[in-house]
Amino acid sequence: ASAQEFIVSDGSANLYFWDRDTLAEKRSVKVTRLDGREQDQLNELEYMDGLVCCNIWYSDDIICVEPESGNSVREYDMSSLWPVDERNAGADVLNGIALGTDHVLITGKLWDRMYKVDFPNWPTLFASSSKDGVALDNGDEAKDLLAIVSVEEGASEEGEQLQAASTDTFSVIEQVDHDASSFTQGLSYGYDNDGKLCIYETTGLWGKSKVRRIDPDTFAVIKSVDIDSAYFGEGSTFYTDADGNRRLIEITWKKQTGFVYDADTLEQLREFSYTTTAPGHEGWGITYDASAQEFI
Image 1 (tube, rainbow, N blue to C red):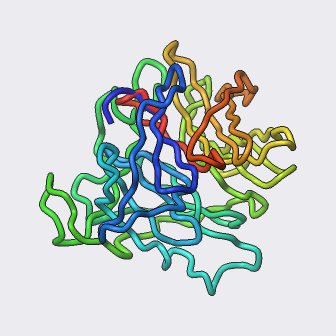
Image 2 (tube, rainbow, N blue to C red; image 1 turned 90 degrees about the vertical axis):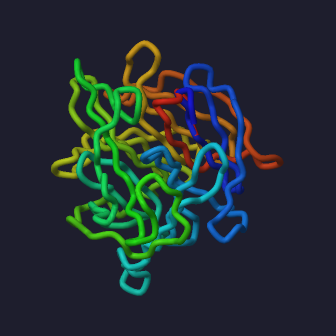
């Protein structure tokens, strides 16, 4: 990606690239796995080290996709993070990836926990990037919220494309609390208007969808806003707009409608319409490539 973009999924094998300022679709790519098959069910997304990392619905896989070609170049089996047979009754699928300064935060729908995860085999894990990269504006200095997923040991030299999937190449730093009533659809780190680091979460289900700001130290919910019961909330991502304002953008499942919020107050500032893959034109996940000014 090459010009500040949002990156959007809709449950198909397509990723859509939207301009940050106009929300116009610029292009799309079809996602293929390392074995060459198309991969649909692309769910919650996170942009990491130049790749679009995707939760796969009803799977514990996370695949990381090259945004120009749509080719998966890194694939991770996260099933040992919280094995299905050990999960609480009611806990749903893994869904939620957020990049922290020294960890990757991972959770799922209706999970009572989140995990801070490290990927120790990646040689430049959490390396800083330029201000035009994945950085989030924090006062006069940008702080990079960057995590680079691990590479299967011995599978690649630095700078070469990964040729094989890696499995279980992560370590858990810490397990933290998560509201078990949250049907997590979007998760990202960002900053409030005072420059304080926050976690932003959007949740789904008809009549129960919420937008939340969470304290990254205590994991308590700082602020929670219900969205209109006509909408089933889906993915979201933090970003800074062209005027330097901190914003959260959210898409919804079946209504082809999205919202832009003030990142501090969670006040809804804007409503917009979009299309994705016909005939449903659904919205599932969204992330942001700051270096390209595009939503994906």
